[in-house]
Amino acid sequence: MSQSHPTYGGWQSERSGWFGHMSGPGFALVAVASLLLLLPLNLASWTAAVVCIPVSLLLVGLAFGRVMGLSADEWILLAVRHQISVATRRNIFYSGALAPHSKETGEQAMDLPGTLARLRILEASNGLGGRLGVLHDPVAGTYTAIARVTYPGLALIDTDRQATRVAGWAALLRTYCTEDSPVTRLSVHQRVLPDDGAALASWTARHISGDAPAAAVKALTEVMEGAGPSASARETYLSVTLSAARARLAIKGAGGGQVGAAAVLVRELHAMGQALSSASLQVEEWLDPRGVAQTIRTAYDPDAQVMLATRKAAAAAPDWTGVEPGVDVELAGPAYAETGMGVYQHDGAWTVSYQVRGWPQSQVYATFLQPLLRPRANARRSLSLVYEPLGPRRARSELARETTKRNAARKLRAKTGRDESEDERRAEMIARRQDAERAAGEGVVRMTAILSVTVTDADELETACAELQADAGASNLELRRMWGTQDVGFAAGALPLGQGLPDRRGGF
Image (cartoon, rainbow, N blue to C red; front, top):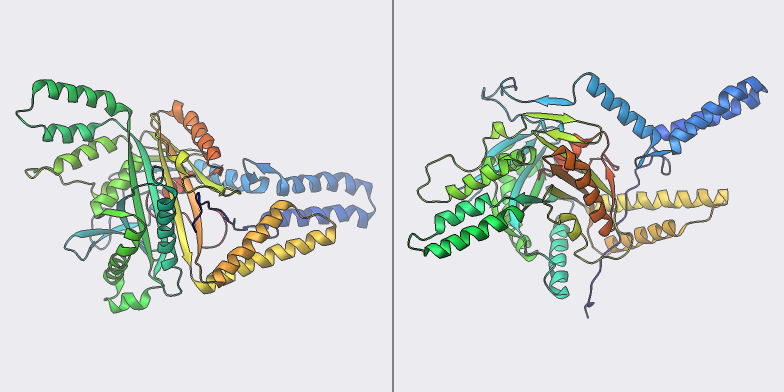
């Protein structure tokens, strides 16, 4: 018998510390501090004690002190790295005529800043006579397809159907928790955009009958003018990433190279159709190259959203002879971008990105993320949920490593006479339950969430950030501003490109 109000929980944070909760540099600082404390004793010198003790205390403070959610040594490393980038002007990006050209075709390549510079948008057949845009990362060896999807939501339905839809999504993720799955990452991205109603007004103007009563047309126009500026638009994307290393035999069998990889990716997309339907996801379209470029362009330049939406609505007319919808691939990136310590500026807009560092400790309902995507008149919000399904062998290894770390920490606390906190007991209980569920055949998934808030008026930025953090508090989430890595945060949180999870365990 199902519960009347099903709840969810049991998220387990990855331990990224090199020793306990300390990073490698932090452990080195503590080791040096310990040696400095022993030095005056060995030398039996008060002069050495006067010099060594303050230095030792400073090193311990750097190892255990916290600045903006980071350890002091991590903060200093980020600040120094950022200042070096500022001094050498590597934090500033200019696009335009000086962008490099492709050696193979002689054409200007897609011009993107930072970690996105290596990406290429390829064109492939979708197997149904249409075009598919495939995002290729030659460094990571991945190929990503992006779909625009619609989802009926969870807020206005009964709890049984909520549970059914959540179970459908869980079943979809579990499908790829196999050793031979070539799909290495799934990402869900949703944007909430202030909408002035331009696209809706264009559609309405084309669909008003010529013999419609003047009074009805006037009333409709007044309603559109009044409601349009206060409306909001939502865009939801699903990104599917294929690993060339995992699928090398299938790629070789499909012809090899980028053509073979695209063919294998298309096969995977067709195979997941039924699973998407079971999860109540409806694919509106798999984006072609111009569609992929448009999603990138509108994130960098929010002012282009209205023009592109209006043009797409107009292009739906059978007699349309203008420019086709979307954006040219070479124009996907920004004209200008600058990475600050805590903010990312791009084409007249400012974005701040956050990573979710703490998930709810208590049981929550399926709609607990809803406050994060409330429409705001002064800002646009983006949320990316990135999932990495683990095969059974790797899942067993990862969970065993977690258990080993926790047991070692418990023994160390016992030797030093420290009591075990309730948080530590609960974390161990969750780890044991996850391992038991894995042994029973359930899948294990790594995941992260990145939130971005974008404004076109710099004076509104801190207000928009405060509102986002308040809504995150309502969702029982702990956010951390991505200090010193705002360009990476923008790529992961504001773009539906499936970025976000590092290859090795830990944070950014």
